[in-house]
Each structure stands twice: as structure tokens, then as C-alpha cells.
Length: 168
Ligand SMILES: C[S@@+](CC[C@H](N)C(=O)[O-])C[C@H]1O[C@@H](n2cnc3c(N)ncnc32)[C@H](O)[C@@H]1O
Image (cartoon, rainbow, N blue to C red; front, side, top):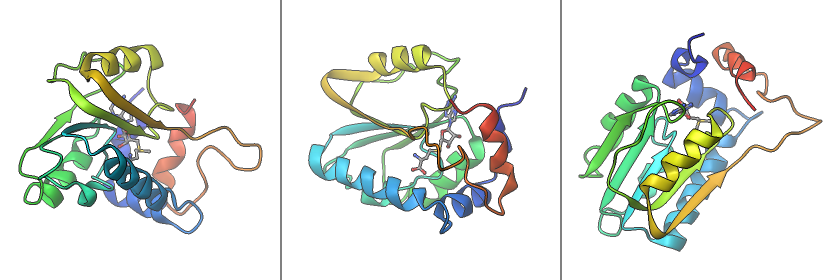
């Protein structure tokens, strides 16, 4: 089965996530901004960086190295177009954290928001251990199960509905 994330366009993703029914794009943006403000990392890896939500809060004079990782090359291409000028050392990796072995210089902060619902946790954890500096921080944002909401909130952006099959 093709990973459903590879069949979602950047426009569908952002429109769904920012829609009034979902509003997760706005919430994740704030969470990432708060992490940067609090931890002031010299280097950060963002797992499932998607189209660079929150990257506008990165201050390159504080955070000198930024590594964005995502399985979907279309998302990474948008991130590069949007942020390569404001973040001079932006590194973007097309990478499946459930299957591949991450080989990057360790970082001070590993941030992953709403990605662990879709990956192999053991493989993901092994990858995080490899790329986190001793004494560094790992921040995860998880969507908890809910009896009142469906896993993927219905919106006009139907391509996201297939995520229900792989979300855990
Ligand atoms: C819900 S989005 C993340 C939201 C993002 N942090 C934000 O603030 O908009 C999940 C992201 O993880 C990526 N992803 C899903 N499975 C992945 C995997 N196995 N390896 C790498 N990235 C993956 C998807 O392509 C998507 O960009």
C-alpha cells in the first residue's frame, strides 16, 4: 500500500489543518514557537516538518542549524521555497522514519508534532536516540484518542481521509 501521506497535496493538507473544524495548523504553530522561545536550541530537527509550519519563528542567529525531515517531497519543496532565504542553513531530508536509518549530526532539539501517530514507534525512537545530543530535548505533540471526535475530522479535503487507515 502506498503511504497515504504521499497522496496528499500541500494545499489539501494546509487547508484541512487550518479549517475552522480542525485548527491544528494554528495550534502546532504556537507549540513550536513556544518550544523555540523556551529552549533556544542551537540546532533543531523537525520530524514530519510538512510545509514548514512555524518555521517563521526560527531565528537563525540563535538556531544556527535546522533540519526538516519528511516523507513527502512535495511538502519539502514548498518548505524550501518558503524558507531557504530566511533560514540560510536549512537542510531538508526526504526520509521515512519508519524504515530508514537517520544519519545526521546530532541536534539540541528534536521536535515532532502529530507524526508519531503514523510511524513505527520503535524505529522512530531508535532514530531519535541517534540524532539527539546528550542533554538535548525531545518534544512530541500527540493527538490523544477521543470518543467525541473522529481520528480525521471530516472537511472538504477528502485526500486526508485515507490517513484513518494508518493512524494509531
Ligand atoms: C500531521 S503532519 C505534521 C504536522 C506539522 N508538524 C505541522 O505543524 O503542520 C505529519 C507529517 O509527518 C509526515 N510523515 C508521516 N509519516 C512519515 C514517515 N514515516 N517519515 C517521515 N515523515 C512522515 C507527513 O508527510 C506529514 O508532513
